[in-house]
Amino acid sequence: MHPRFAKILDQLPTSLRDVVTPMLGDDFAASFSQDQIQQLLAASQLAERELRLALLPLAAACSVAPISRFFVGAIACGLSGRWYLGANMEFAGQGLFHSVHAEQSAISNAWLSGETGISEITVNYTPCGHCRQFMNELSTAKALKVSLPDTISTLQAFLPHSFGPADLDISDALMSPQHHDLTLSSDDALVLAALAAARQSYAPYSQDFAAVALEFNDGRIFCGRYAENAAFNPSLPPMQMACAHAVLNGADLGEVRRAVLIENSKGQISQQDAARSVLKALGKVELEYQAV
Ligand code: THU
Ligand code: ZN
Image (tube, rainbow, N blue to C red; front, top):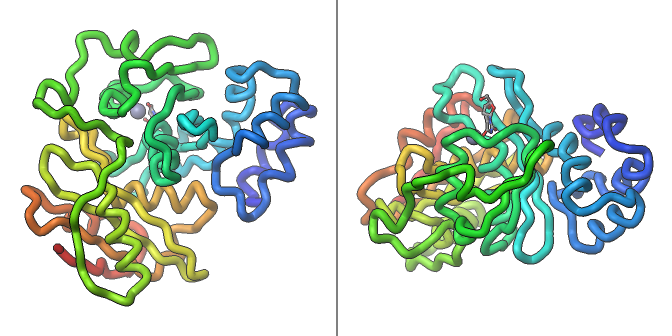
């Protein structure tokens, strides 16, 4: 088990701790299957919303917050029935705008795992305006519920008079399946992973279909897809998503040995400079880049 979980197990009710502990082995991918959820419900005797609230300390334990020391955890319910953890991540020494919020991390986790929407998100603190706007881009934004320790409400109640994709005449939505026609020939597994992720990225405003693939010293690969937003600034760049996903899976960002960014050569913007500045915070790895 990753030491970050061992440290907070005493924050879980005993009946839950005994059943969840064996699920947190080294292959734990920061999500729970329906089978596991049924076991946790039966053992804890909690209702679903209460169970997610009880599991939040596991999500918050994944937080990397060297600047704020404010540890946020989130759990997104995928439409498939699987639950996905997320946590905030800050980059020491870099601009605050590079930060990933716990809600974005959980949603990225669900999206990268093949979900096409989320029905509910549970968070240990109220979502900030940036996250409310980020979530208003989702395929399920109209029905999405936000569950907090003391209340549950719809996203739309948290974000009245909202601005969203329809205001820019976009009918597409974040997490709806994307298949962009980007091609390149390579036998490099990391490049191919980045290409596959870029094909599934969401960039209806700039057409900068883009993704990052990170390779770690132990050979593991984690990707991040670009997730654009109608209000532009809350867009989640691919480097941030890749880092957040790797951290959720227990990887140490100091162990990145290669980083590849692939993006559409016909897009209106580029992720190159932003990706390099995040990478600088991680060490001496040079960004490998191809526009296709
Ligand atoms: N934070 C979240 O993760 N979600 C929110 O909606 C509130 C703020 C994080 C961002 C930053 O890492 C820290 O909390 C302080 O704002
Ligand atoms: Zn936020």
